[in-house]
Image 1: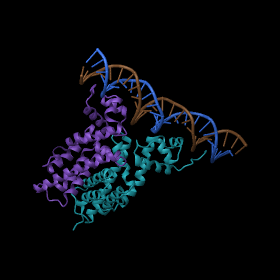
Image 2 (image 1 turned 120 degrees about the vertical axis):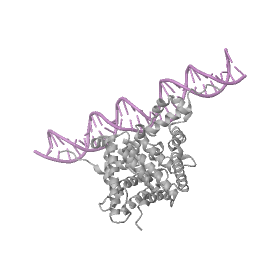
Image 3 (image 1 turned 135 degrees about the horizontal axis):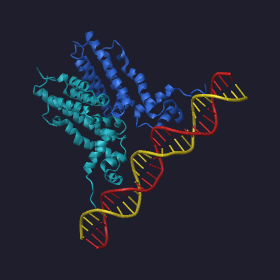
Image 4 (image 1 turned 135 degrees about the vertical axis):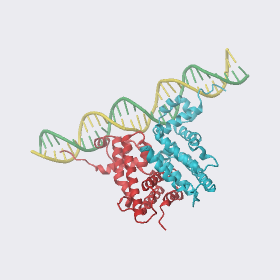
Length: 196
Length: 196
DNA sequence: GGAGTTCTGGACCGAACGTTCCAGAATTGC
DNA sequence: GCAATTCTGGAACGTTCGGTCCAGAACTCC
């Protein structure tokens, strides 16, 4: 044994994640990362190997920390249509805040890197699948409980809702207009209105 | 008068656009641009002022050249639900090709730059509005002609469809799966099925 | 053909990029 | 306190970045 690390790896990872989140992979330099984490270059390379490896770790950190927070109760096994509504509503809410313009790290990454970086694409794809499955589960629960009318294809509806969510994040970047974003969310949810 | 330009400005712009399209603003270097256009640095700076200005020109070039091509008859005044279907179908088709993974320059740009670059955000926003209006017009025509059931809010439906289109482009980057993408497009269009 | 103007190739600029490296400080087990 | 080990700050690496500059070639007009 020898000298122990003088910083918290998780805190550093968290700071790196936030940086990548707001500026993207290419838009974040190693200097930016050392400044934000407080680590020296040596420490950063010792612990995280390099920029790309750190980015992948940051992506996973985002999935395990930020995504659950944004999904809220949608992640729970007995989520229903209310949780889907809350999720989309939360996205809109976020996009309207000052920091919200940075959107979703996974969406940003899908666009910036997924087509040319298989390792990153795997993480992004895994997220998309998991999100779709959560929504599908919620839709099935909603039908089962009679909260919405039966669906021809719950899996398809779920995937379309996920696409809408991703679209919201793109549109919100250029046009963070409350009425527009709420209209989109409401309209996408209209087919799942409560049974009269 | 003096020596005339020895290249075609439009051809150069076109090559630059394709480069930005596939690699993004930050992912494209001036060296890349000179290589792709065949221009020397001097000529490139003489004619296009710099990388950022060239990018904005390329964005506008994309809007005036590529977007109309992808929209097809959807742009026409008497477009209807068929043209909306064809548009979404075309997007899916594109995403499944080798080159299609580059997605849509305007979507890529919205994610990469819109939050921090007002000039670029303006162009992106203008495109989103125009697209939404075309879809809305098509939906209204479809209702008017009795091709689909009346809509509570055609403008809202149109905006949701545009969001779906944008979402498709994000998801397609990480997961260019034919069945998935078609499912999304079909599901988003389900509320506008032909009147029985 | 000569004067005037514009375009072009390529060298050059300082700055920033991601990464490597090493001397020395810090901490451990003994 | 000593030896062994690990971490740390910062200098340094070669490369690439976006942008500037200039000498000279190319062309038009007269």
